[in-house]
Image (cartoon, rainbow, N blue to C red; front, side):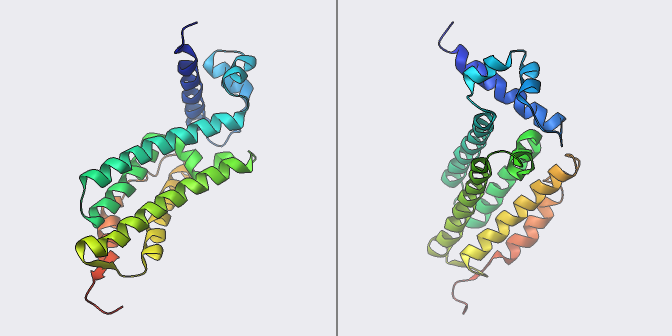
Length: 202
């Protein structure tokens, strides 16, 4: 067996799980069904992942790596705060739209009945996104002389709540209501109210 066959099989299992989350919306995923989807025995699944929770953790790892690697590039490439925030949120919504099974992980519904650690991981992912937005908004005053209309913490929370709500609608509609639907117009409205001039009184 070659050295890279194990990572390939792990990736295959995670891809199969993501597909099942998309196709079997609302159904609880069993390891037996997942093994059938991959074309291996349940014992073979457990050789790669000691539990179903670890499989979900693998999906969350993939989501984090994909999103935060791109956010790093956004911060490197885009100087102004408004465009940075809009691009980060569009990235998150676009990622969810292109990966419906992973949108269910982000939405949290599929983790009901699973270990609390998984829900905590997703919570931490959104907290990290919110912290990143807050940092961008706080830097705007120093870099651009722009101050948020409400506190940076409250503004970042509002923005992440918008994204979470759109992902939740997507999952709840069985992937019919796209998270990017109306987003451009909504972002125009939100971003127009985001900052006031730093010279204005609070």
